[in-house]
Length: 373
Image (tube, rainbow, N blue to C red; front, side, top):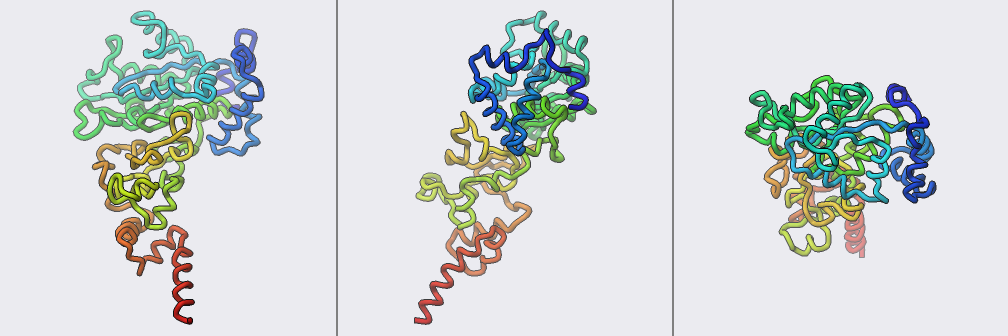
């Protein structure tokens, strides 16, 4: 399993296996294997990897995790606490020793800070760090302090000595809303605040807790971080545009758009592009993973994507209810303007880009048949 397996070691007499922990909680082996199959799908791995995931999770010794929270709204912690499946995130975090998390830990004050200091000192290079919220750098970082220390000072010590760091949410990944222009506190993401640290970005407002679970599972299974894009985001969760997996995509291809909130098109699920949806330029797995126990996500609920998993989205994706002026990669503007007002002539090329030329062929054949008669 590489460096991680070597650092974490296998289970021993001091640490119970995951099988034993699950058995004590009344979770059957069959249910656990179902969970591993779900994780392999979330990670875009073949289903044959499920047994390997199960074996890795069963053998790995409980690694320590510390969770730091800075300039944020606590939405990522809230998302984690509300995860279910049966309590997927809880099952995975049960095999981690969560030694520090300000929101949920029993200790407070000096006791809490002593726990964090102990982890950094005694487990250097062996623990996992999770960071929620942006880190201010302006004026030596005085705009966010915990226990008398600036966020940047603590983050550099904790993340700099961690085996790996996971930045959860857009604030920790890219600075988020605190970094929106004019960025008065000099807020940045973890990678910028702690150069040289091993950081995986899981942006979103909030993050999808399933993606955090999958990232931890991958880490414990393969002993390394998953493949990422140029923004440090795992490809299994951010490798495709929302537009590509959206259930409203067929309406986009057919030129069927919501023109006004509450109109007939809105009621039957037409494309929200004209209403400001940023799905064509946003990379995330919201359409497939969804939220609230996979029941829904913003676009399914009738609201356009805000592009919240993109760097600087508050500056680059706003106004929220105006469509993007130009989306690279295809002639979306021409398609929306022309098809949206019912002009079919001259748009076959635009439709061909989306693979729906057949929509025109049917009409053309019917017209030809009429003329011959």
